[in-house]
Image 1 (cartoon, rainbow, N blue to C red):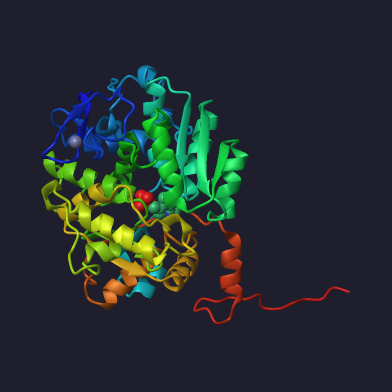
Image 2: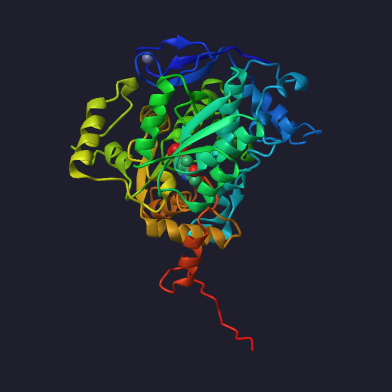
Length: 448
Ligand SMILES: *Cc1c(COP(=O)(O)O)cnc(C)c1O
Ligand SMILES: [Zn+2]
């Protein structure tokens, strides 16, 4: 099965179309692009996807990304022809996307919800340790389809880890641009381990991304979430949530806000499924900012100049965004949080993010580093690990239940975006008796 794919500007009043063979991450009008497919997709595919859970020695059925290949088939290969697609789909031997939601009883108790109503999907179980593998496998597939040999990205750590891993595996070159001193040691070591070309930027992530986007305009292949082919892979995070719930959407889906790639991809997944008639109910999104890096929270909730930033059918108030960024610059305010994965001041997918939240009636909240630390610990008490940024969703759910915005009889799914790559943070947290879930060593045993 194949539906012809093309690129289209996200702004309805522009709507320009481009070929999927183009290397571009923006429309001539400067806005972002979507991958679009002609025609419709039959809900019968749900059975096909479930059937592939018996992989029959096909790694592309094992992959939680390519198991849904009909819905992300921008390559336009026959989805039943394993010989054909195995030459082009990029996969880490089927290991990416093998995740699903789990009940976590201790976390449920902590957020004060019945355990069957609050589920968490640990994307840290991906081969490079974060959800990024969902998107890099499809993004790199597009690069491979065009015969590209070198790809680049800016990163807060997990994108570079994932890209470096996949590129090494595909014998491609990865050049990564990272803010010096601002990424977790475990993530940095992955870039070294997978032998990427590392460029350290003396600045923050937003500065590093600007460098990369400029290189992109000169023709380099950019693998950040402005790449619409990457976001196609990230849609499968939602497919797995829905499949687990028999395609009956939850009331809420909660996730941390960085560059808003997930917000964009998750929203696109929901919009398409509604469009094709697979689902009727729209799960509401909760996009969670770190309090120390809360540009989106402030803009979306009208905490700057009393005006709420909205999608408005594509007529987004860019002036408000730019004024706010200038204001931050003038005041010398830089995003600052220990959750470095979401220490992003200028989310590049902001318009797509707004479109998603508009479609699903989403909200934006903020949580403190301390709340995230407690979240990491309580997830740990359930036998899972996640990094600080990921625990933003635990903290947000707790607050929203307290505020009665999330009701206890509603169904909530939190996306734990990545696993722990800063082990010292945990040792410090558990060792320090002031912390809510402290658990210092019980004794020191002297051996003579
Ligand atoms: C990249 C990343 C994020 C941010 O995701 P966006 O899609 O950019 O909003 C959040 N958590 C972790 C662990 C990440 O690696
Ligand atoms: Zn356009």
